[in-house]
Amino acid sequence: MLKSAGLTEGESKVYLALLELGPSTSGPIVERSGVAKSIIYQLLEKLVQKGLVSYVTKEKTKYYQASQPDNLLEYVEKRQAELEESRKKVAELLPKLTAMAMSAKETEVKLFRGFKGMIAVHEHTYRKLARGEEYYYLNIPHNQPEFFHPYWQKDHAKRAKAGIRCRLLFDGKTEKKILKNRNSFAGCDARYMPIEVNAPVWFIGYKDVAVIVVVSSNPITIEITNQEVADAFRAYFEEIWRQSRKFGKN
Image 1 (cartoon, rainbow, N blue to C red):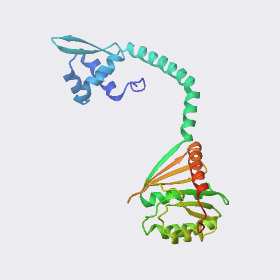
Image 2: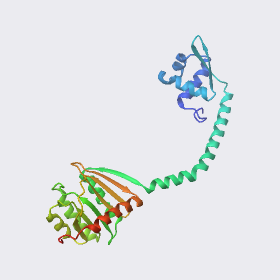
Image 3: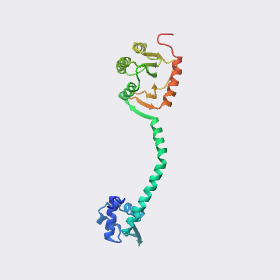
Image 4: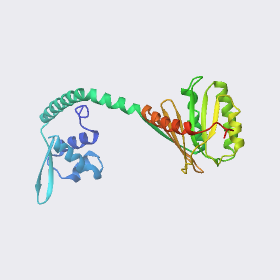
């Protein structure tokens, strides 16, 4: 019943112990209530704040005493009034809180590690892109581990079958056979970067998604879902793409 009035289990035990003991120091309260000695003062202080316990100090020792049980009703009524006031404040804030929640949903950032994480992010393209739509890659590194290439070849076959197009810009040091291979798949336009970018990162973009891949032995892939960010990445890509030449042409 005391817990339903708003007291915790520990506070209830301490209050009941004090009703039985009368004015008491902390030791007998711990013994009678069964609460841990380490939290007795914390529980007593909370009961004091609630107006259910008072104390006096005699010779530097605090003696605690439970208030009259009638004070419980006053406490419950006060708590109800506070809850009603809180309800009104939350109701006033609700439109703002809802707007904040909607704003937070506009941007989603996820971080993935390793080759599998990078591949998982790449394969998200199949969730959002329909036949005839495209994704782009910018600044693809020339020194990818050898085992990456079999995956990409298999994936390009899957992509072509799904009717998804792609534009790829490779680092200028990439072997020609790799670009030749990628261009052999339908819907793929693979080219060399027209500028040299000495940065260990490459980028992926489509629709409202922008991806940053930090190149290392254990790649870090950051996937950002936000239309404004995706648009900014695409504008950067389009400017570089405009300067590029189709593979095989001078």
